[in-house]
Image (tube, rainbow, N blue to C red; front, side):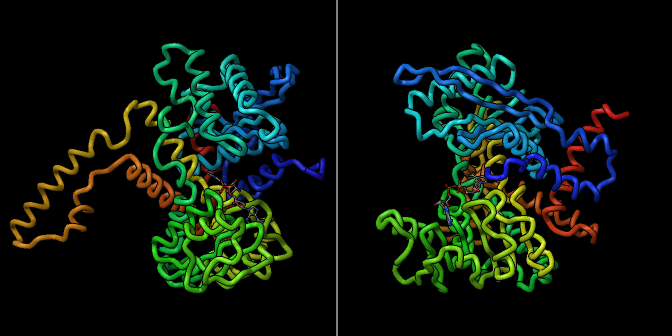
Amino acid sequence: MSNTNYSFFKSVEKSFDKAAKFTKWDKGLLEQIKACNSIYSMRFPVKMDDGRIEVIEAYRVQHSQHKSPCKGGIRFSDAVNQDEVMALASLMTYKCAIVNVPFGGGKGGIKINPRNYSAYELEKITRRYTSELVKKNFIGPGIDVPAPDYGTGEREMAWIVDTYASLKPGEIDAAGCVTGKPISQGGVRGRKEATGLGVFFGVREVCNMPDVMKKVGLTTGVVGKTVVVQGLGNVGYHTAKFFREHGSVVVAIAEYEGAVYNAKGLNEEEVFQHRKKTGSILNFPGATNITNSKEALELECDILIPAALENVINGENAPRIKAKIIGEAANGPLTPEADDVFAAKGILVVPDMYLNAGGVTVSYFEWLKNLSHVRYGRMEKRFTENMNTHILSQIEELSGKKVSEKEKLFILHGPEEVDLVHSGLEESMITATREIMDIWHSNPEIPDMRTAAYVNAINKVATSYSELGIFP
Ligand code: NAD
């Protein structure tokens, strides 16, 4: 961060205050909601492969315990500092509240660049960090449940659960101490695509609202809508995939080296394979090259999905954006100046705080799976298939007609784990979108959907606090 006076946590507080004006909660209660409840700043020594001892700086912040456990990822980055972890923990509280995941917000960080360490060193750092958390009661299925974030993934989550379980022998719910684990260690199917699928469900729900679509000058539904996606990583790839599979036309995909455009539509998997083979997204067969990647954001389209970096749309380029809807798949892709431009132009911004909450929603499902000790679908799959077979055979017998083999397979299918996870995510995103829209429409003073999302989060957390009875 170049500006040493900049505080990410303060900027989150500013957004909170902007939204809090539209609520009627006691000032003291609002102060309590904003505050980080517990901050654990730690230093511990780790012996490196060459025999050197390095002092590692790390954090875990529990922003709110209005619901237990706390939830939020662990980041490995040399930019980690206490202010950043506090800000990210508080955003987790609001994100969980919006998608009705019954957790408080948390976040962890270790100030290292993982690329500078061997796998063995990373394992030692991760395991030592976990044991520090155990010592201070900062981790556990009912206390605080970390997950992956920048620089961490399934491998680190497997080390965490293994360390935790070995320090807590006999704790039957130990697998629920962390999410984002490999399937073999208690992970859940459907997590990889969760964020992109959640982005799709959220934007689709907005597109299904006739009054909202009328305001932005579009017809309802996603079929035939043109989409531009920035970033062909995990989130961008899956968002593009689900839009294409549901009848939208992904006209452009941008990566950092350039973008490709085809008015007839692009297939994200083919573009991905082309980039893997040639080392560049450019020169994709049948598509036009856009050598300045940023120009792709300014293309004529219905829906723009920034799914790469923060601050890519700012006061400078926002006036040239032609999309009618912007779905914030990345974290913080728009600056506050860009928000003002879009509010004035009537361009709808679907905010990151809830739109990219698919990951945490599916983490919640993983935690539930760990506590119930049974794979989703195991109890009902066969029962449903047998029942559907019976119903269909009765219908065929009574009507004297047969359904096609393709239809039959679809109707008889009992739910697998991945089906139920996708369905739970769909429900969560639809409900969250409707709640936010209701709040926005109920008060014409609320300037944008982002502020409405914050108002929704504040109302839920404040209700929970006040119902605890600690503010008589
Ligand atoms: P990723 O690393 O898999 O993908 C990011 C992609 O963006 C990469 O392919 C990268 O090459 C590309 N990119 C980098 N600079 C670019 C530029 N200037 N122009 C165009 N493309 C560029 O990361 P991801 O997991 O897909 O995350 C993307 C964003 O979504 C981040 O902001 C992240 O914080 C946010 N997010 C991710 C998740 C998740 O579950 N993965 C959840 C919530 C939010």
